[in-house]
Amino acid sequence: MRTAGWSDYALLDSGHGRKLERYGPWVVSRPEPQCLWRPRLPDADWAAAHAVFEPADDEDAGRWKMNAAVPEAWPMTWRDVTFRARLTAFRHLAVFPEHAANWEWIDQRVRARPGETRVLNLFGYTGMASLAAAAAGSAVTHIDASKKAVTWARENAADSGLAGAPIRWICEDARKFVQREVRRGSRYDGIVLDPPKYGRGPTGEVWRLYEDLPEIIAGCAALLSADASFLLLNAYSERLSGLALASLLADNLAGRGGRIDWGELALMEDGGERGAGLSFFARWSAT
Image 1 (cartoon, helix red, strand yellow):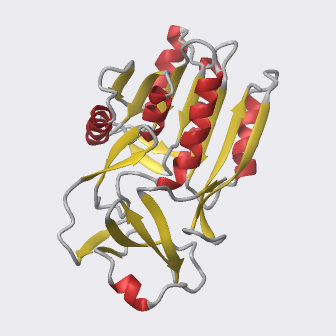
Image 2 (cartoon, one colour; image 1 turned 90 degrees about the vertical axis):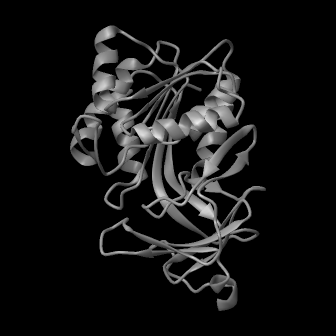
């Protein structure tokens, strides 16, 4: 799946292990090991970036070098959704723009289903998938282990005019939540999950992708309603492939019919055919 830029976002250039991006009015330069080629734009364009992330030895740690007075947070929009971008300590900007292709697909699946759709968003972070589903008319349950991330997600909902939408905001370990919902007999018409490689829950629960993903996918399969519409799984890990994720879904959704698509989620340069593959996905749809 290829994500192109939109009015508030563009991948301006890439190469030599970095991305040059525009988030609203602000241009940032960030590391991206996938970008093995040479940049197209001159060095002066890269030097003019308003903020540059300089990595440390740790995989995602580092610091921002500021070349302009970039605000703590600023508004951006995607379709009917408004969200706040911000320079975080982990090189990203509190949103992953490559997921716009996923947001589009979620929007289509929700709108294509008659009546209200119940969507579960696990590892929901700042809520873009939740807001895309809610803006399309779904009732949403949003789960994330970070209280700060849930707060940011609620702020994004308010900025989008969705403060009164039927969204449940829950700060909890995703695996524990799924286990409890299975015991309760809860059902959802669509499920989205974008788990990290490693993480900790609010009370110290440890999440390890390779060890824990099979269990939570089995739980998600049990939570799908009889006439469910979709399940979308995304993973950032060089050791997993889209085919591996698709095979995991097929194993747990056997007998449901429908279709499983899988592949790579790519972010494309503005006005060009070059881009970076940033994660892998697999998605099941009933039709």
